[in-house]
Length: 532
Image (cartoon, rainbow, N blue to C red; front, side, top):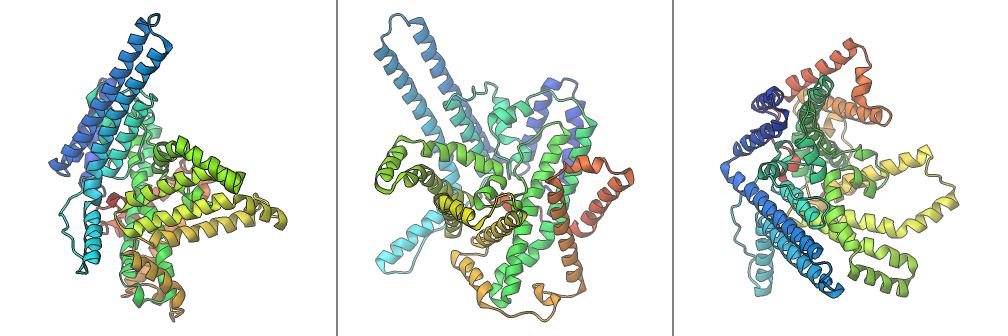
């Protein structure tokens, strides 16, 4: 069921009607569960097997860990007077070890399924290349025809985060399997997130919601905005960007550079457009999903950019990878040794640096099984780690030059610099192989040919229709930029609500008209981040 199809819109309309028509509000979550099952089954019954496996194993493991904890606490409480301190300590250690084994086995199973589908062919390719190199023969490998279950990266991360929270006793396990399954399979966030934590999402899904016209109206507005970004900006950009990426050797450097910046606009419009559609839909039901974007292209550093782009994925990595590694005993010991040899600053930076290396290696692999994505993760990580180590030097330099953080020109410089860096890093794995990505970079700086006209900048230019399409794209990008600037001062929908009725409905009708004229037929129903 394509998310940009009329069938999907009809499906959403039925869900909204049934959700608000149900007489007993405490069963509203059952409507969402049924809708999620229907949506997932529409993609193939095979997909349901894997999401049920993840849900079921996490449900059983979480309940088992909690029963062990409760049994331990009850036993200690009943035999408090009889047990010595050492006996209590041994009992606690034994319970903790059993709980750790349960969590570890469940995570190995589920991450093993994820790795099998996403990384088996990549691993076979590397093994084949290595064996071929060592044997002096042609590289060989036997690829396996695998169809990756829909949303497996997102629901696996979300569910294993829940399991870790139960292990750390941040939340108690969900006793109702239906509610657990809804938490894992809630269809608006299935294919591209957000990756929610149980405490936040369960409170939204299982609460009783009363109808609010404001929520309904604002949700519909956000959906229209999301469809505009996806169908009018991202999808119209897609053929131009694809042409430049596929044939960058045939275009002048300035066109290749324009292609890089257009790709940044495309992926933002595509991914944030999806989030607007789904967050808008859930808002019509009174449910607030976690936000995934906070004007990322206005960031002043790469570290800040990643705190504002795909926010929930970054939060997941920070909670379940970065912090455990940063505070690990072996890492703190390493920091002490570094401090003795290289000074206090090096010692303080070491735990964070080691944790960041792990985070960005996993981030690269999460996005794709290729050396291009591994290099992309590495480059991002190097910039962030280098900035961390050089921060004292930067501060001294700014003091000597009289630069103050609040100065407009300095903030503008940081924002433009970060956007350029992010754009260059972003295209590295997307052109093709890692070699293609590097070749793409080289083409920008090696070819200095200037097209004789504006149309020469448009890849595969065929006539006036392409010129009109590019004008619509540039208008869409300018509109997204204007909305982002407006968001720095106002809540845009509140601001729009304060305008006259004529102005409001004029804006809505303009967006709908552009979607109908330029978006119809341009989308194949796929979203770029669904591949991850």
